Image 1 (tube, rainbow, N blue to C red):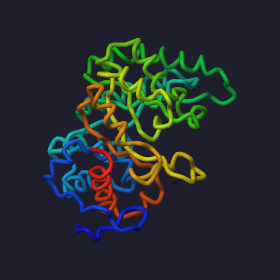
Image 2 (cartoon, one colour; image 1 turned 60 degrees about the horizontal axis):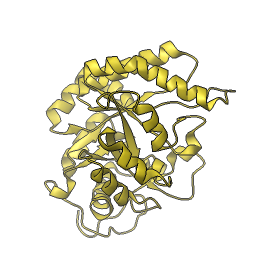
Image 3 (cartoon, rainbow, N blue to C red; image 1 turned 45 degrees about the vertical axis):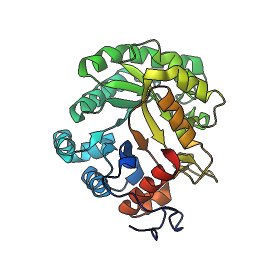
Image 4 (cartoon, rainbow, N blue to C red; image 1 turned 90 degrees about the vertical axis):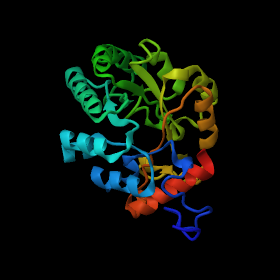
Length: 293
């Protein structure tokens, strides 16, 4: 692509040329597979290879569609790093055994794929439940059972705080500070935290908490907060530079805290999902160079 490339999903001309494969500015960029949701894992891997993006964060569902052994083989042979594996968690519901069994399966999958971090969305409140403290206590109890298993398999559990609007249905951890309060009950090698710019940009304590997190930062995920919020609030993430989050400032903060890992772009957005996958990846690469690094 040239200077006449078009940004997704805005349809506006790109502000800068698309970085080409081998560009050192792409060295830490990772594509979370959710950003190209309509693609299979094989298609997402091939898209990263074409664009020169050196890492990928796969999701469980596409891995299951391909088969775990085949997915692991594909990733090993691709030349790409695996930056994270999404996702596990949901430890707050009434069926504790089923949740723990599913998390153990996810840990096994992450180990087989060579993922250093398993992203944990801890779960919301069961129907009719208003006991936030009790739900958070169940997260701690669940982690206590999972940590030895994760340590044996060399997989780090990454607690992801979600924006407060998702507290009821997805994550009773709403701030990085809350995630760290729980993570610090366990060895750093076993439990870290996910810093997702979309979820934490608003928090007045976020920079203090990033500094506190230090070596517990398991992955930094980049995307923007855009308006208007869609009817399905989950799909309100935008390309970096299209919204209100200081994604580059947060990146500088995690680096200052000692993080040297991948910068993973994870976008849930219906218009992005309907766009051509290669155009999406090209926009991701341009915005990474323009706004993140």
